[in-house]
Amino acid sequence: MMELGTLEELPVAYREKLASSSLTPLWPMMRAALPYDKPNRRTKPHVWAWSDVRPSLLEAGRLTPMEKAERRVLILSNPGLGLGAVSATPSIFIGMQLILPGESAPTHKHSPSAIRMVIEGKGGYTTVQGERCPMEKGDLILTPSGLWHEHGHEGTDPVIWMDALDLPIVGSMEAAYAVDGDLQNVRGEPDSSQTRYKRSGLVPYNSLGSRRADYPLIRYPWAEVRDALNSLAGVTARGEAVQLAYVNPETGRECLPVLGFSALMLRPGETIKPVRRTSSAVLHCIEGGGQANIDGEALRFSESDTMAIPTHAEIEITNTSPTHPTFIFQVDDAPMQRKLGFYEEFARAK
Ligand code: GTQ
Image (cartoon, rainbow, N blue to C red):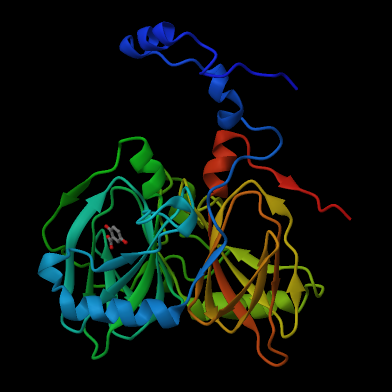
């Protein structure tokens, strides 16, 4: 290991000359920029309890009308990333969004890509590029980069969902922006999960010959995902993760460029120990609960709680219920890391 020179060793006059020419020496910060073996991580393992989030969000509903919010969202700020941080992990923005009966969140589009994971309430919907998607608990709805979207609510009780965006990445490129639009014309047909892409393994015949749609499937209904997890559990050894990835049905690849999405089932009493990965993640408990151990920190979670997992973390997750399954929705940044060529999984030290 080299002993690297420090800033203080350099003559003051030289340092001042560099600063006045907008130059900075690398070597004093070499190890901070490129630490050996493992990145420096500021992100803390953390659980945002639904019992904290929900009342604060409902209070926002009383304090701030939609006209003054555009999107009524509380951001999950990772406590390791500084007060008021706008992300849950370095790459993942998570917002909790409330819409009250009769309200709508106006049409816009933006350069970051987003998804919604519905937590509570009936009667909400998101219209994406003219396709109206009903929102039921556990449904995943994509609003990819550049597609018009608006939210509405025709039910009687508050509707709450979790937003995940690649905003920290797009923002760090100074490339994040939005455009306002008019109310969309809604095509008078059910969303594609109920029509063109009703079942995995089947795609419209003509799609084989045409240029593939970037985003053919916008909504992934939870009832079907849950059912598929149950079927997969029947052929998966205990202790092995029962996990399904949400993909683009035309390409079989991840549905968005930066963030990846999957659903995980833990059977009663089951513990899983996923391999250590270079990606960071956010886990949201759709149903059930349990305990996670992240880099030696024990964290309990229950239904609708949301958890941040730093890059390179050692993790273990247990469903502490002896009788009920636990279902978890996972957001991670593996798709972007794979594209950048450094995504890696590390075998466990025995
Ligand atoms: O619903 O379009 O949490 O534009 C942040 C930015 C949600 C949205 C967020 C957004 C939205």
